[in-house]
Image (tube, rainbow, N blue to C red; front, side):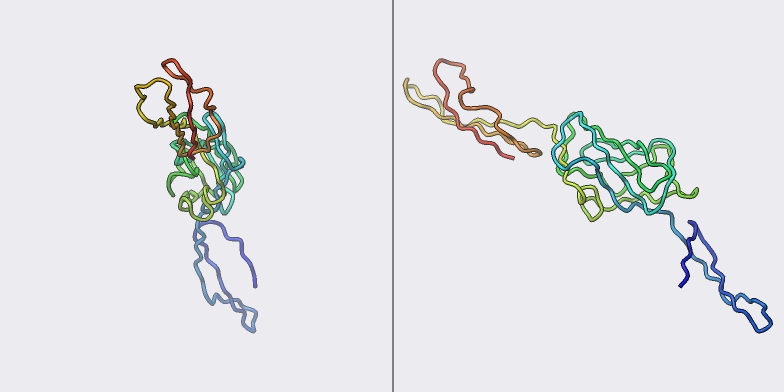
Length: 212
C-alpha cells in the first residue's frame, strides 16, 4: 500500500504497466478531488463554570489541516456576543477572544448556528483555496457546548415577595416569603431575614428561598 499526500483540488493519479521491452504504458488515469479542510472541533480553554460581564474566554476552532488567515474573522455566539480572531494563522487551530458583554446570557454557551464562523472581510485559506467554514451543529458532537459546560450569566436574580395582607390588629405576626430566581446561574445566600426592613415601625420576619 502506497500513501499519497495530495494537495487540495483535483489531482490525477496515473497507473502504469511495463512491457517486456521496458516501455511504460498508461493503463488508467484516476481523478482524485481533495476538498479544502473543514472545521473539526470547537473548544474553549477556560474552565467550565459561570462567567459574568467583563470576563474573557478564549475559544479554539480546529480545522482538519493548516489554514492561513487574513483580516479579522468572527464567531457569532448564542449569548449575543462575538468571538474575534486573535491568532493561529499557519496552524490548524485558530483562537477567538470573547469578552462577555452586559446583558449577554447563555446556558450553555455555544455558537449561534453552523454558519456562525464568518470572514468579516478577511480570508481563511489552505494552500490558496478557501477553507470550509461550516461548523458542527450546536450541541452535537465536537461543538462548543458538547466539549464544555460554560454558562454566561449577567442577569440579576429576580425577587418575588408573597405573603398575607397586613392585619389591622397590632401585635399579630406576619410572615412574608421572598423568592429569588435566576435562570442562568446559581444563587448563593444574598441576605438574611434580619436585613429585611419595613417601611413602617416593627420588626421583620422573612423566609428566603433561592431558585436556580
